[in-house]
Length: 305
Image (tube, rainbow, N blue to C red; front, top):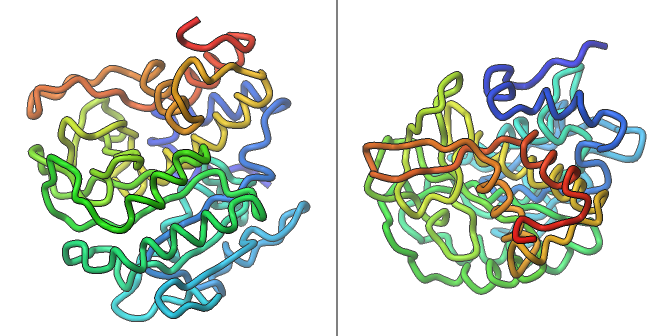
């Protein structure tokens, strides 16, 4: 069966296809790793989430932090969580996300992805604590924290999610969130603005030009038509980079105090420079091939070596 990229234009700009080709015999595209997706619920009867891979089911765990059970089924007005994992994890009828061989854990952590302020911080924190309690069991290496409050934050907003975010960072788990989709240039959404969470913005597919919400507290740009997709791509790319780091016995400690911070530093170091006149900021746009080449070509040396 032919392999069909989930988003050909964005994948070409991120250099996903080049990475798949160059490392086809060396990397496994998320196999053995699990991505936790915290959103407004997932319909597990959706065919992509029913997929059985040779090494096990695509979905290996689920949780509902609102109701305290294992059923992540969305409840209206929730609608977003069923499809938000496609860009990162799809492996269905030949169409592939970036880390298409990974496992997924779906967590219903909010009632709707577009939040009203920080009113659902408690259930988000409970979902993040579930990840902390289970990341070794399922080998959760990355978290797509997809809610947005659609506001303009220049500084962090202290809430109960900050402590589990800190603990996940200390455990070396990548946690990222989308900056938002309104075109704001004076602040980004919560929780993307929080410490210990990578704030992911976007570039226009086909162009190295920033668009949608961004500010100086945006950590990384990724080519995508919406920041929910750019964030999903970033989380998937972190899983591929993590495997490359393991393969190379790369000394990541020279790049950051935790593995998650080191991976962000590598993405920033190897990314494409994007000058944004609207924020007077030079951002870095994720280039997956450059990041993987850097790690595997360095033979275990860090960026500070």
